[in-house]
Image 1 (cartoon, helix red, strand yellow):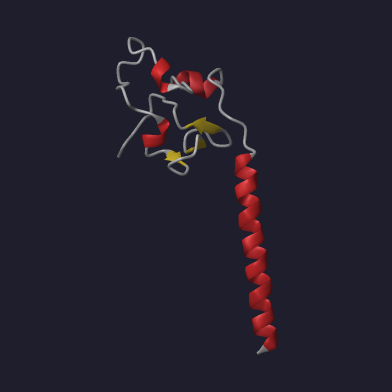
Image 2 (image 1 turned 45 degrees about the vertical axis):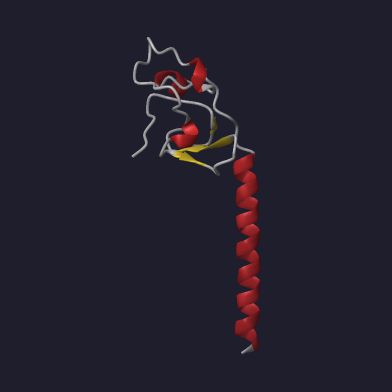
Length: 102
């Protein structure tokens, strides 16, 4: 019985440590630059209020990455992950042509 309990505690400790390290790793991801090739193709702007509505007529006032179904972060986070831009964080106040509220 002790071996089983000991294994459980060790595995729990390892799991908790890996989760903590994973959170820190995501915080260290670089932010997406507007000059990035994929960002330019999708019209990404770190500040949605600067979107040129003549060039991107699909933009509607009030849309921002924080309200997009592809954005993954807490509601009060200024930066988060986007399913389109893996490995780079996007601004919660940003916008791109793939904005979706599914």
